[in-house]
Image 1 (spheres, rainbow, N blue to C red):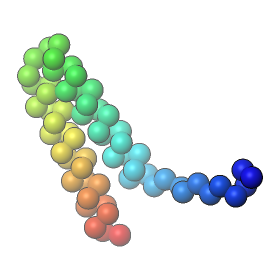
Image 2: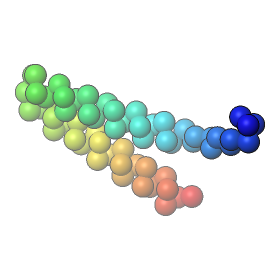
Image 3: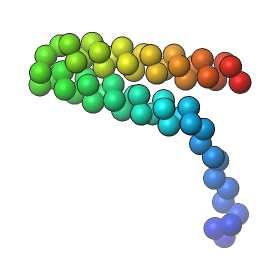
Length: 60
């Protein structure tokens, strides 16, 4: 039964994408404690990694 379940292998770009999104969310959460600069940087990081993932998808 377990052998019939196929797992899709993840690409490295997927891990980079999710890591960037998590880092951006972490910086936005830090902005509530330390100030607005972390929120701006976090949202820019999230946008950058979303555009990077779109670029990788269009490239293939």
